[in-house]
Length: 184
Image (cartoon, rainbow, N blue to C red; front, top):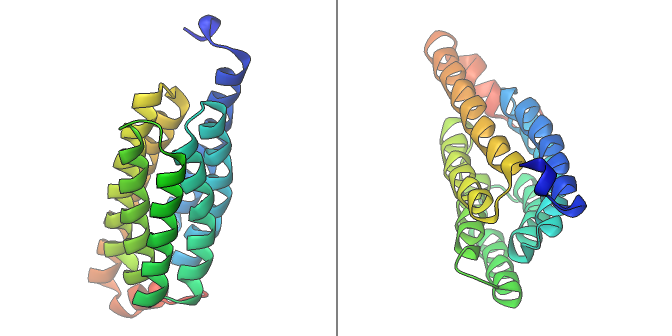
C-alpha cells in the first residue's frame, strides 16, 4: 500500500502520526488548558497533513482551530466571539470549497468551536469527540491512514479521560471543579 504512495502522500501520513502524538498527550490530561495548548501543536501538524493531501478546506480550518483555541481561552462563554469565529470558519470554507467531503471539516469546526467556547470538562470533551468523528470521516474520505488512526486514538483517549473525570467527580468533587478551572 505505501509503495504506491507519492512522497507527498507519505509525508502526509508521517505528519499525521506526529499530530497523533500531540493529541494523545493532550487528551490524557485532566486539565483543560494543557489540552488546548497541545491541540494547537496537533492542529499545525494536521493542517500540514491536509495540505499535503490537497484538502484545502480541512487545512485552512485546521489552522483556524489554532486561533479559535487562543480566543476560547481568553473569551470563554462569549457568544459574540464564538459567532465571529464560526463566521470566519464558514467564510474560509466557502473560499476553499472543493467537494462534499469538505462538509466533514466544516462540521468538525462547528463542534469544536461550540465545545471550546461554551463548555468545560466532560461536556467540552464530548463535543470535541463529535469533532473528532467528523475529522475521522474527512480523513477516511481523503485516504489518510495516519489521520484516521489519529482521530480514532483521539476518540479512545478522550473517552478514557471522560471516564477518569467522571470517576474523579464522584470521589472528589472539589478536585473535579479545580481541574475545570483555567490555568490549572
